[in-house]
Image 1 (cartoon, rainbow, N blue to C red):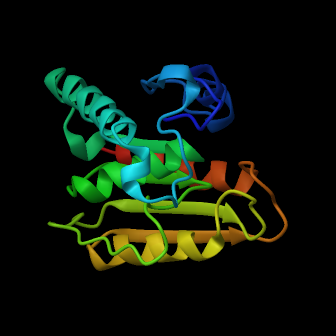
Image 2: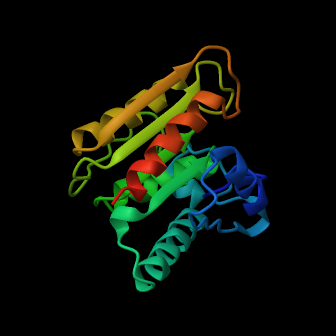
Length: 188
C-alpha cells in the first residue's frame, strides 16, 4: 500500500478497515519527507531522479522480502493512491509479471505527455484496476486511460473507471472493486 505525496503509511493503513479484509497482511512503505519524488508524475523523468529510481527500489526491496518469506508474486497486490498509485503502476510496467493485482487509485504511469511505455514482457492476465475522477486536479483522466491501454497491450485484465465530479479521493465503488480483487488473490 503506497501512500501519496504528503501522505504516510498510516494514511494507507487507515484503508484496511474500509477494505474489510482483516486477515490479510498489509505492508505500507514510507517515503522520505513524505514524497516519493519531487515533481509532478507528468514532469520529465530526469527531473524526478534520483528520487524515482530510489522509490522504485523501495518497492522492489519490499517485494523481494515478501517473496523471501514464501509469498509468490502472484499473490502480491500493489496498491497505491495518488503519487503512490503512479509509483505502483510504474513499478509494475517496469517489472511486468503475474502479480496478484495492481491497483492505481487516482494515478497514472509516470512521464511527460508523449511518453511511450514499452513493456518488456507481459502480465499474464494480472487484474489491474485504475480509478480516478474526471476532474482530479492532479491526475488527468486522459493519462489514466492511456495507462490502462499500456497494461491492456501487455496482457493485463484491465478495469478503468472514471468517476464524474469525484475529486482527489477514493470512493466506495473503488473499495468494493478492491475487495473483489483481494478475494480473487486469496482464493485457493
